[in-house]
Length: 353
Image 1 (tube, rainbow, N blue to C red):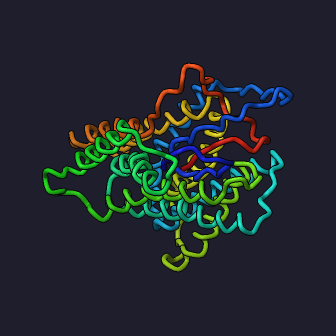
Image 2: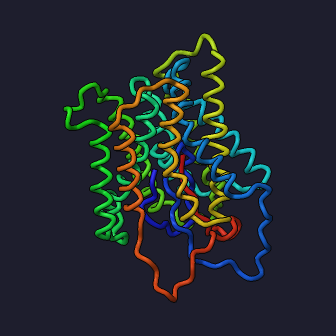
Image 3: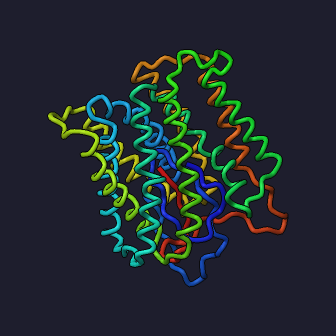
């Protein structure tokens, strides 16, 4: 879920629900001769709120989807619908697919780590745990990203504040799980799958950073290709573990379509635009609204029960995650952050779900 530090070249979005925090944008300025970007029809604050709601409701949609379909079928449906949205956007913008076989090979691995595996794990997890807990487990991704970056990314040196954030965050995880009660009443396999799903995102982002730099393709083209490959993976796996559905219940079907078209397709396009307009630091703040909305949706619409340690632990996790994403202040002479350069300059940065 979290991009632990700044990538050096265009990388695809995990296109998940929800995504990792947006990695910092390139410092390469837009050339003076570049054409001015068209002003969006909707204010960025409205799109930010829409993105927060879409990703926040994703865990509720997964829960409803699993009431009518097997977990692999839920994942396949959301990937298929999300791919359709991004393919339509690619056709409208006349994006070209990657040409290199090596790039397609790396995208295959990225699709597994960032889409097929975590999406399936969340679907299986929500068979036995509430959507509120799944949404909070997802918020641990920045913590896993921080821990992994210390090992895998030598240039991403941890500061004392970020290390403290890691400790605070995992204290929040223990609070949510009720560690002082011996985890009584907790479904350990389901919770473990949700935490493993959140762990997949930073692993995938480290892989993407190391293998897909400088491909020459746009972020949209790479992301659309990645989702297509994830869909192909589930098309192979799903028939091996499930039988074809004998009915198509309305509410679960609509939930899966919304989960894919909105949470895995439209949300990527919304976040892409936010990164371009207001910069990655502001755009990544959506991450901190997701567990709040997921919890409110699960309690209000699904009637899920909430003990005191769940919201308190979630708040501690978010504080820790915020600390792990903090960086040293730039020197007084440094230029302020600017939105990323236009997509056709191949220097835009974009995230995940």
